[in-house]
Amino acid sequence: MSPPTMNVCTYNPGDISGDMPGEKLGDVIMWFQEKLKSVPLEYREIAEVEFNTDEYSTSIRITYERPETAEERAEREGREKADLERHRLKELDTLRRLKLKYESV
Image (cartoon, rainbow, N blue to C red; front, side, top):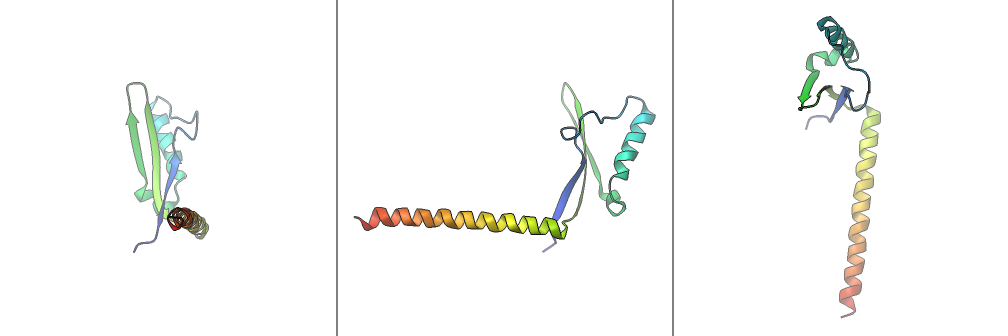
């Protein structure tokens, strides 16, 4: 089993307003170079850019995947543990209600 990875979004116009490239080609190239600099060196070769266009606008999303950190793993495991506990409590409550319903028959 491969280690979990994180999909890191370095640029998403919904998260960062007003940070779009200019209209001149040189400005656009410089803008992309700045975004590339925000990606750690070891992940630059796998960084991806996604363009989405509708009839009103174009959006750009820049992402890369990396292994999760120890802190991220601890957070994920904590969430998973809490989810399992909520599920267990819900099932126990269902069992309790079913016992009340059918033991009284």
